[in-house]
Image 1 (cartoon, rainbow, N blue to C red):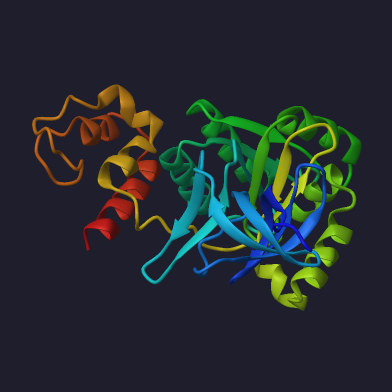
Image 2: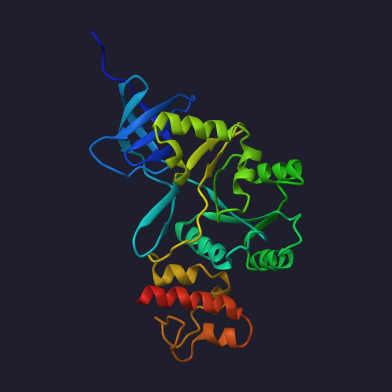
Length: 298
């Protein structure tokens, strides 16, 4: 007589719709389906599952998430990963990077309570190098941690720099398409492409998995979560307070406005707008904040 089905803890390492790939702490993988619900699993989730067949399991419950990073526009919310400690935001001078993408990702990470590190890749390129360097310098001056690497021409140095940052932590890679994110991933996880093929075969998704995040365990502790490149980072779900908190340069002036509920837009005697006029806050950063605040108010 067969005993009770095996019950076990696992990590969601890839997902598409109701089907997910689960990995146990000892490295065994299972194809999992969420019991009774659809689409609420996120890569990085820690779950409890029950064996339902050979290498098949039903996901019974999700453990409380320590963090969740997502992006949202007017039409949908896209969860990127759960239970990550930090997000590595990758950009390069070619193809041209979208400065607002970087800034939005930083605001989103702050709202989610996740540390952010900005990684400039392709430092060997001359084209656009000055703009990329100025961007990195500005973000560093505002208090964010920054790195500069060349994965193509100095792979070993880039790998050593990145390993020092990701060791023992769960790190999420995000960036626009073409920034070299996949190259950085392959430096850290050389078998990543083979693992991706395995995900596709096990989930029977074929090329569709290019739109899905994937969790790769690092040999010496921690993990890397890869996400597909995308061009926009929506923030429509954030509150006005969360937007303000995403701008570290605002902090010294908060509390100095005439009105407690000042939105820092058209209100009189606004300390933030006064700081912009005096040059204490960069005009381009304030214009970015204004666009986000106005979009939220619509």
